Image (cartoon, rainbow, N blue to C red):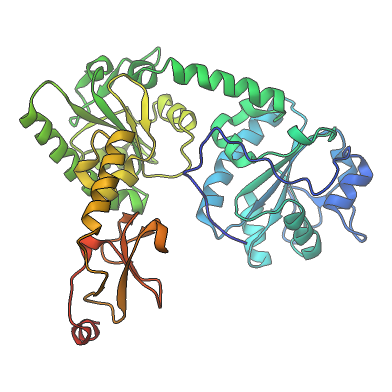
Length: 430
């Protein structure tokens, strides 16, 4: 099983899980064959102790919308999504919704399984039932976790039976219920309406607040002052190591862009707004204190609204809003890593121009090099000749397009990071 989360997928493309044959109504017998075994007609309750004694009959799930939840305690994206899913589940249950979740564990041992589901308010397949877990993984073609497959009680329409519930929960929360095609079409229409009418003001304000905080945290800056500017929404947190590593780089790029625009003149400007995911006020203040831009107040409800609106599943994330208030790209972080300050203003036209420049520059590069710190010969590759997106082994930044790659072990570096040496020197440098 792969444990990857593709965060760059077009958020409008909801993934339908394979049905592996004709759909059928989720009758008690169907549910039992799906979730039970010849020796078991029950699921574990959320209150089950380590001895796994408390049980619920599988037949009790008849008539309910069911989420089959594939997850594991050892994988951080699963733990992150688990917190979100718990909130949605508890809200739906408190509203009397006919929704239930069944946990299918990919944990390494029974202790990890029991530890993980201690806070889970839903049902579980017993950890010991390997055959049922394997059968469910095969039936729904689970290639990555977390994965939430939604089953409708009247499973008679192939086009609205199974969806990628993880994406739906992140995008819509409780509003996604009951996860039918009609409901999802309605949500997508509303989402499109919001995006079509999007402005920097309606993104960053709410009825109680029309301002942002500057670096002093006490002075207020009106959101309307950002009109006509290119704005980066920076979702980040001090507890997140990738965020802490990326922030100094972003500060440097921000300052270079601001200086270049000032020297250019003409009134064009760039600003960043910090959208905190910190866990407490002191962490927020400490982290924001290192930044030279603006911020939403800590725990402002707009922060959660933005994360859901832009379908943010991972941080750090840099979303670029154009001078017209419309979204330019959600890949600001990747563009900063690839092109530094040259990425501004982050538009498709600018990225296309930078890619062409990279292609021209590659024509004059040596076809192969020995690099200090690596013993094997590195070969210049492009996306069309065995390359592709990568993490540079020298600077740890993302790369795309051209790279020097070791065809023996997969080591890759940016062309700009190459420190050419003789073959003997590269061995000695190791």
